[in-house]
Image (cartoon, rainbow over all chains, first blue to last red; front, top):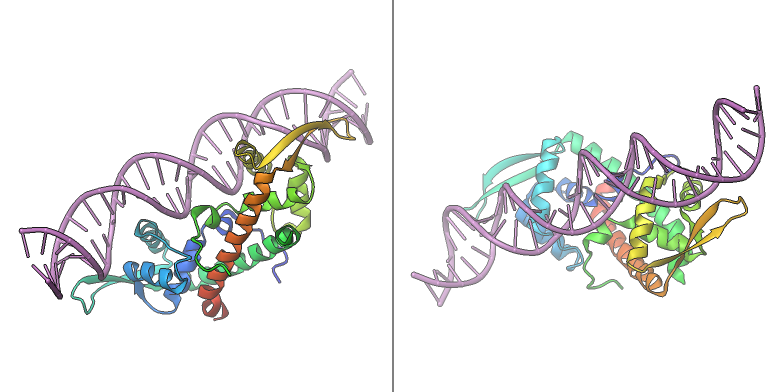
Length: 116
Length: 116
DNA sequence: CCTCTTGCCTCGAACTGTAAGGTATGTATA
DNA sequence: TATACATACCTTACAGTTCGAGGCAAGAGG
């Protein structure tokens, strides 16, 4: 199904962007919560720091993949809610395909080696 | 099975190292051939350049994951054959586990989003 | 008053992947 | 002979990522 799609650097590297896009595609959220949620959801397996997440969010916003909206949460503290834009939705699909391609490749190469 | 294993930067990033370790664990090989083989095996999906592979091999050698041996191939040209060391074998297993952990996380988060 | 939680942010260090370029030899071809 | 190609190694410079460490501010609870 992946056939002839070259894996670029982004796939080998920036999976965090894909992860954040996926989380945000389930509904708007904000940095602080995303960090908490990812940690909980994965039982501590994935523990991204704020110093990692915020810059990625900013980059994605610059590229138009997500949009921000300030809003006072129930805690009274202002939160910066991000939502996925149309362009971001397209990017998520592409990223997911690239990811699938990487999984295929890794499995085909690791297959025997990992078993031994 | 992965339970409480933190994914570190190496996992999110350097999958090339894992790939090379896996290939070399099937038997000694040399840079030029590895580049060719990975390209063919994956039908062009994975196309690493020499400028990518050689530095990684050198780094792995420095860390003692692989060892090198010069030897004249049938072409008359000298080749630098690499083999996986014991430490490299351990690293491969760890990397494979990290990879499995990443796959789990990505699937759990992408799952729904990727379907839509 | 102090501390904890929430919630945002930036900076610097360390590392990676890659293109581009360089060296050298054997073989085939004109 | 000259030219080109495949083999086979290598380094350098650039752009991009992740992450720890740290800072700022405001509300809640002791």
